[in-house]
Image 1 (cartoon, rainbow, N blue to C red):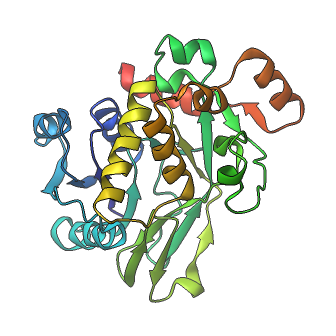
Image 2 (spheres, rainbow, N blue to C red):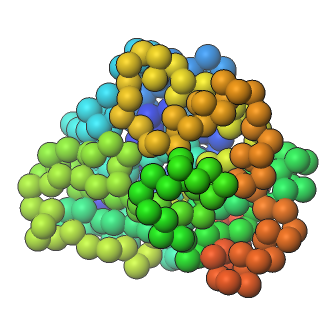
Length: 287
């Protein structure tokens, strides 16, 4: 099986090369990347490694943000031009960590969709303030809180990082019809027959890595809203409103862990210590 890892990215200079290197060592054979108008040096970094990997880079600077269309396009490009049997539509802040060290173990010729659980990883407050590397953080949301839909907007003191998040899917190229939105699901010609839950792969999600990056992400969402792109989570609209008011400190307090907050969450089982991703990512990046 040949596996493609595909990315739709914008301004991910701080993490994209880590993501590519880690997944190339875990079984990703090739990469298709759409750069959605990066204004940092993301594009230059991709150019600097494009000869080290089997890689196609597509520039798509428009603000129409056709997420599902573009992720489907990348999967079909990977199949047609790179011969990929399976594709993963990934985000730069997500690391797919297999228990056995091989992403392709469950990706068979007879499969269709492989659904993988995803977990938020949270910073300790001191490590966040010290700008410690994201992969050193081992606080995994173990039993997320099943908040009613939209409650984080009506009751903003609740942390979205503790809520339920959708998993992600890997999809077999033959029979692929469409990758949906954020790659939480896909349409496949025989998906209902052969879709399975992964027992090998967990997706570790590092969405909050620094105050500067958090603000940059919300600025990107603000630009999309101003361009008339409204299909996004309600929490993004709330964060755009917070950015307009210019006060992120209270929100950051809910997104990272101070000592007392962490102790309570561990005691009731919402978060747990998980060193797996830390060990895998740090080992690969150091070698």
